[in-house]
Image 1 (tube, rainbow, N blue to C red):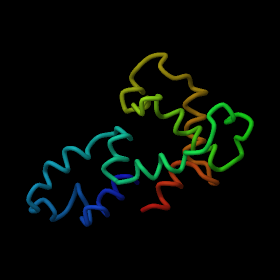
Image 2: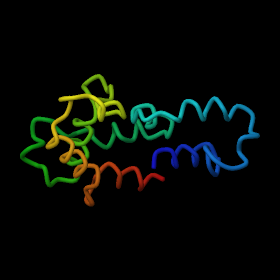
Image 3: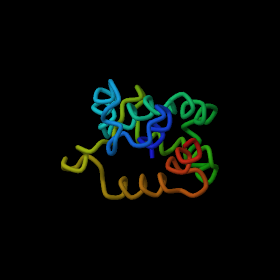
Image 4: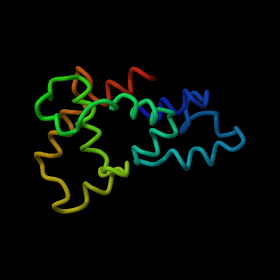
Length: 128
């Protein structure tokens, strides 16, 4: 979904397939966007500031008490995805590392991402 947002931002129908390969400079953009780093994709899509704004105002210590609150679901997802320095904890290499994340952590993240009230996937989709 973020890559679709990036295509829309650059006014390109499809960044990876089709006739766009003749656009000057597209190769460099394509290389940069072929990442699985959600932090980088949020920057390229222009959503990183909006995501920071969306989570602003929620106290991380209160997450457990307010888990049903829409903003808190988004905040908890962000907390699971990123360290305090905004470095992404989850990436494609996690699946090859032993004992990095428990199956319960993985399942919780999947449920948070897909949450119909205000999961991150739904949040991204509303901006596409």
